[in-house]
Image (cartoon, rainbow, N blue to C red):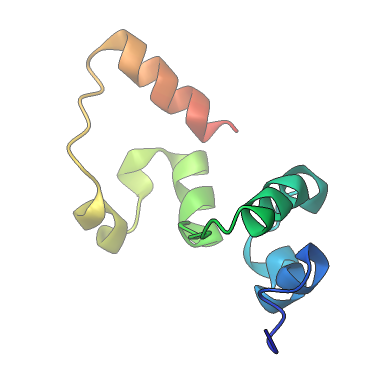
Length: 92
């Protein structure tokens, strides 16, 4: 397509402003995008604003902005295994 979304992974990278919006290592994700392109799979990006991720990562769930807390499902962090998994994900 003329906006680059259907042509090549590098044009897709530019069109979705990958380096600014997602900021993950492009080389890790490029093969997945190419696979999706070749197999005509849709890609849907779901992500929180980086500021919210960093706030919770640094200050815990209680530091999450109100708009984010309203969107989260109930989290039962009293179960050690679940809490450890949750905390491990925050460290990624």
